[in-house]
Image (cartoon, rainbow, N blue to C red; front, side, top):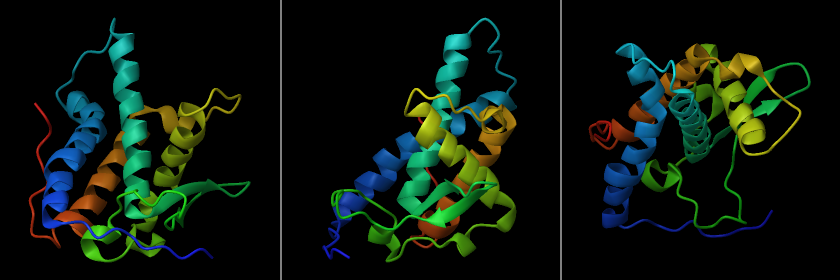
Length: 172
């Protein structure tokens, strides 16, 4: 195994990530759920609906990676796995730079693991590449919203609350 040093973030860098970068990603994560709550009417706006769904997918994948988790298909089911740091990407910012550790699968409620793994895999494979693989289950708005809500709860519990920081509001 290749050893390398994870960059220690300065207080200013941490602040910028919490207030700007993660706020932006949380907005991408929340938009589908929040627009659905207010009965936003996407009919006749297929372009917007697709963008909102894809932003949800990308944000779930990106934030699970930030937490140190990833999805995997084991041949019969979608499972959540640890996603350790990769020395090929030493500039990646992850939760361990804020709280000293990456999350473990056991940190995630068992009832949320499959949906998180499935949405992660859909984003990782189907959204990032043109492919013959298509998993309709993890393209449904209810499943995307469920995954986004679970990711937001993990961020709140393991990042924002330990740092005694409020979860940022959505960008206006």
